[in-house]
Amino acid sequence: MTDTTIPSAAQRWRFALLLFAAVLAILVASLAPTVTLWDAGEFLAASRILGVPHPPGTPLWVMIAHTWGTLVPIGEWAYRINLMTAVASAVAATCFGLVAWEGLRKVPALGGDTPAWFAPVGAGVAAFAAAFTYTNWQNSNEAEVYAIAMLVIGLGTFVLVGLAGLSVIDRYLLVPSLMVMIFAAVTLGGWSMLRPGVPRNAWAVAAVLVIAYGVYFTATRVNFRTFDSELVFRGQSHAALEALFRNPKVRAGMKCGPVSVPNHKLIPDTRWVLNAGADDVIARSDPNSKRRLGRGVAVYATSRQALLRQGFTPDDSTTEDIQNSLPLPGFTWVAATADYGAYVRC
Image (cartoon, rainbow, N blue to C red; front, top):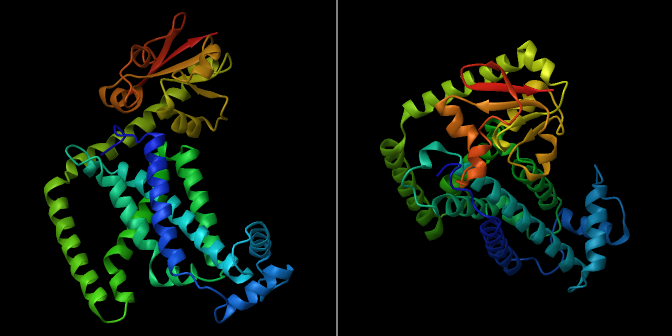
């Protein structure tokens, strides 16, 4: 599964709601009904009176908890704040699941005949398993600060990787890739955190089977020549883009208007190379940018690899998508590199 299989908004919503409901249901079922030991009692008291708990004081958590406890009149104060912790943990798990889905969707080895459900199911299982590790589960059942911290981290990562479109740049996939690795480690080694018994033994056996399947899958699916060619292309294409924008004629054309590229795929790297703002680089596939396409520099992917990866939009076989990779009327060719060409109109 690669970029050619992009989940729709409805699919993402169904995935998120299902994962959130499943995690929250278990957390609510195991939720502490009242005050627990150690720091929880102190946090509960501080949240009720807007007080200051032990250093560092956690003022943000106190304000959030006080607001939640005031606006959500479910049960006693202790139960309300415990419920807030569970909800925050469930939302965090959902965000991590969505990010993991995005990371798995970009893995080259999961292309070809890999079932379409593999990435969402794998991401969901990983997020679900991570939500119920011993420490995380324990801190999600009582008034503690860690669930809110995980919520902030989860939302921040989701916004950066998903909503802000940073997953278009492969280097930003490092975050979801690391998260997938952490989830995988928890899924495979989480049994070691359980006490001896049937659940621990069953989890350990299942982990061994999953590892065996992973070894088989890797041995039969991964083609290292694909990795090598992909890395070589990324290095060459980036160098070609830099060389294109060093051309004096291209630099001069940039004074006449914005730099346009076929679609969203080249925008991040182009902005990176030029250190340009959002209004300086536009996509010809964006309807809101049509009125700004009359002048400036129009960049096109010219090599086969660049055209397939960056010239066309996934799941879009319309005539308009093809036209976005054809020279605009009135523009004049000024420069070309191994992978890209530039046309200018002033």
